[in-house]
Length: 298
Length: 284
Image (cartoon, rainbow over all chains, first blue to last red; front, side, top):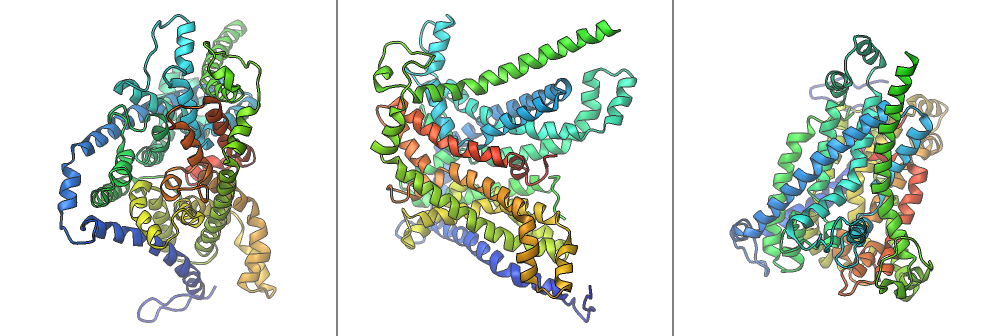
């Protein structure tokens, strides 16, 4: 392949020119489509509904609204419930299957079953959760009553703490298999020699986990954190179906709150200011995490 | 020695059975209950006690949802939107990944494009839909499938780019070069040599994108208003938030919403994790 010699600045090779020729229109279109909303939302955030300039008034209203901090707190609580449970249970299950299930057929069956929850529409899972937790018809109360564990209906969706746990349980149900799948395939990459060497030395399974398995899994935890965080910060569907953010604002996570400001209160200015704040803070979070990801970019 | 090993083996089997059994119950029962509820008759909903086992199963709820409530139209909208999204996403995905995997370009260009695609994955939909809603109103495409197709393609592009990049990179460059030595130009080489080889990968990416678009709810809720463009998940939601919930209809709608992705995943099962993790996790 003949590369044109550098003369002065760097000249492009034929292939590079071709590459840019193909890339520019496509990337350009996507870039414009992504950028127009950004520009627009920044403009909206500095204007009133009639388009007149209001300076930072939308921002001060958005940031001065106590409901925003309720939403941030709810998002934080949700994240802190969901991520540790998903990671611990997913890890536990990955270790369990890795160490105890030897038969390839059974492993393959578990694999197929584990991917199914990942592709079920969150709206449909919301429906399932509704059938389970709903007052008066929810099957969870029916089962608990028949087993004699409770004598009075529990209002799963009507009390703040239980409602938060209920919506979190849906997330755990859907996404623990994802953590399992990632960590399980991570465990496959642990070299057999080091495990055998350790076993000859007579280490306990815990030591083996702590010093061998965990070493190979470490980059994957970051990966899981990244993708789960991206999803948890945008979670909307199943909560909208299950509680709609209630009771009160107890399960009103950030996306539900922003949806309400824009499409229920029709406060465009405040919603735009919120969107700008969220976009900026998400970019910061993204920049902090993404550079450590074990992705094959080159 | 042999007896001790078999005892340890028994413990192993016991632990595994308990774990897998518990998981099976937690995952199996809700789905079982969804299906059982969808098979109930209207009369049974108001019965004083709840039957855990199917009792005179009937498909009445399905015909009620699809025909009486007219959800067949929503199903059709969903299929149109999803297929169009797949086509647009794959076209853009191929145009963007072809040069960075098949042509000699600086590493920095490739890294920048992939990083940029990854950053789109972190974009919060609700923050984007607020200005996008205004754009859609201005362009007068509110409540039209095209508004959904555009935004779905944008949000699925990161998955498509990363998946296609992985698949294309695995096809040896020499095959196209050989065709070009034989006198084919780049476009012919792409069309007749690379494309046929890349079909399984393109299909996989298409299935993943289809599934994601099928599940999407927030954009559809905001950008559609009538059966003209409403997708199936919006219809399902309409059944849920009504004042009086018709449980069997709601459950039947839930089953229908789940069916297609589950069927597709039987075909695309080897690729879903690769897709979700941007190729970090590859199925053996």
